[in-house]
Image (cartoon, rainbow, N blue to C red; front, side):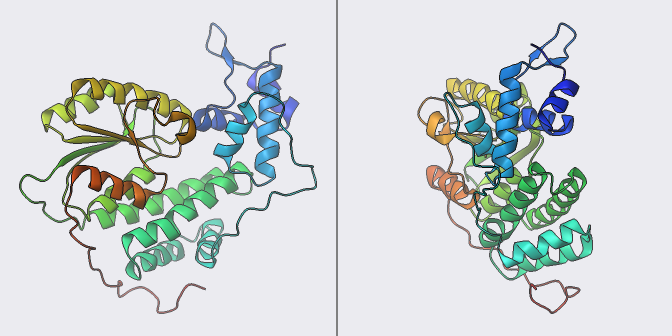
Length: 317
């Protein structure tokens, strides 16, 4: 039997918006299409939707739930009254989440800027920014946080990361050239921006193309600057497929010498060794160090900053 997205939502109790977003971000479910392009779900698709919703509600991260939901064989679901307890967010992240839920942009931005002012870029990204984005994303997946909160958070984080990137310093003549961008179809660029910021601590000539970079444009940019390396980022299943196509094409050119691929859209256990490109570690600081090591880049040290005078004197509550 086939179902429209509206019928699938009624049958599973999962909203049309969540179903479409899971499909876009995680490739789950994967419905057929009518001749006019309308989604058509079958009974297996409905089972996958129910499984994924149950796993997410039990506390399992959405990307893991997606892989489990489409895995072969029977899936043992947690009992309805059980919870797969996830590690509690740190006090700093909990405080930021309170600001997110209240749409308190001033408080959210001040405390994020304080995190960068009182620690290194690596520590702020790995310990505050990425955990915050993860918690917001998981809260959305569990329908505890609305899409408006997610967009609100993303825009403030983007503004802060871009302001930090503006502190970049000149590179040495002959420094390795790295072209950085998100694969075509990838519009979530905050991870790429965070990687860009951390790579500024190394003597690298960075050419940043941003989100949703078509294959031909990535190749053309690498040729134009005679790049030593290219780095592609993807967070969704659809973008990962596009990323492999670009990586394979770049690998055939033999220049750039290195093609790095990374992002939460990768399943490293199944992808490692079977695709083109050097797969980066999941941690953004580790990914930056891996790129620098492969290119023999010189470490230039952390950019020293001082707290903005308009920040309140209190610590994180």
